[in-house]
Length: 135
Image 1 (cartoon, rainbow, N blue to C red):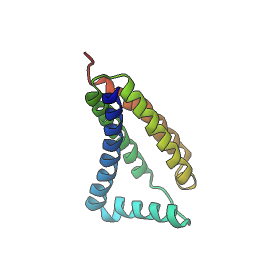
Image 2 (tube, one colour):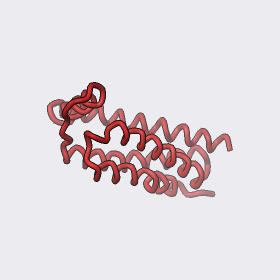
Image 3 (tube, rainbow, N blue to C red):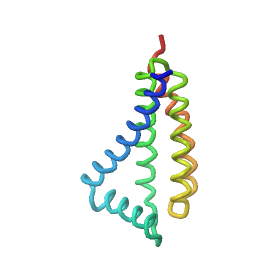
């Protein structure tokens, strides 16, 4: 049971680190594109105001979120030594956190993005866990 808890915690931290790290990398690679979009989004969240989401960046976020979710599910299963409960618990935590982000960013991002991004967290995290074969 302790390994499952550690697996879930590690998966959650890995998801956050990979997401934020990839944001930073993309902001450095494309300061006038991705970086400017990210800064404008953060400014709108903090101070309110106008923001228009770029569809290309939203699609990039879906791809990044997919990769990060699979990786974190795999890590959770690897640490837990099983591939069922740890990815499932992790996926529920990610969906809960995702719903919090949806509430905060609702007026700034299209509904299709909220639905796709949040809905993919659960199955892709579980898929990542399944990549680790159980013994």
